[in-house]
Length: 229
Ligand code: ADP
Ligand code: ADP
Image (cartoon, rainbow, N blue to C red; front, side, top):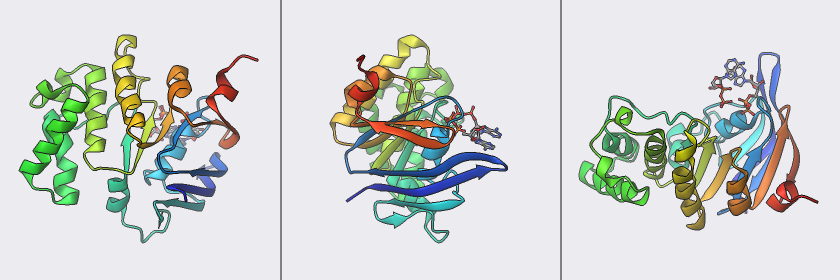
């Protein structure tokens, strides 16, 4: 029984093949780290799992729903699959609290007060309860990324996708974001993470997927990839 079932997926950008016959099955609670050179399709693959990108061929089933079916409700996908981006993607004209409560209020019709309570408990979890009423620009990169994680978690997703979540951060802020991700992993969240942080992969990944030129070339344990022979 898989929570994510990616079957023979192709994605083209004009004449560029971004994904070439990609298949990957992920079990509930599994942590998968995707590695590979720049331009190998890692980001595109993640984006197909919550339909930020449509695929050209193949099928993707998330929690039993065929999300590549044009009739599939996109809001339902966005509720089940949380995503964290390299550049945080927070709404600049909304406070931290509003960033977190917006989607639960709009998409899940959660009352404001309850949404605020959820947001505060998530801010506590990511260690920045004192920042609820400031704007993203008033935060460090590490704090902004922790808000982005809290915002994704506010939808109570079944799966969390991370696209190079620490790549835009100053080195001293990487640890605080990885710590939140490691805690999430230990809580049993299903996670698919594109990252260059090999320490994170070693500590957290059940499987590491190596991509090149749009293809999955190798899948193995972190030991397989990162231990010296
Ligand atoms: P990675 O995340 O591994 O760096 P990407 O998934 O971003 O790779 O890109 C895979 C390939 O698809 C690259 O050749 C990239 O230039 C191309 N690509 C990605 N997004 C687009 C887009 N929106 N339009 C055109 N080409 C794209
Ligand atoms: P990433 O760090 O995720 O690889 P990029 O800097 O490659 O991001 O791309 C930023 C945005 O531009 C993404 O939304 C990606 O889909 C898009 N993009 C990437 N490559 C191309 C391309 N060759 N042409 C048009 N858009 C692209």
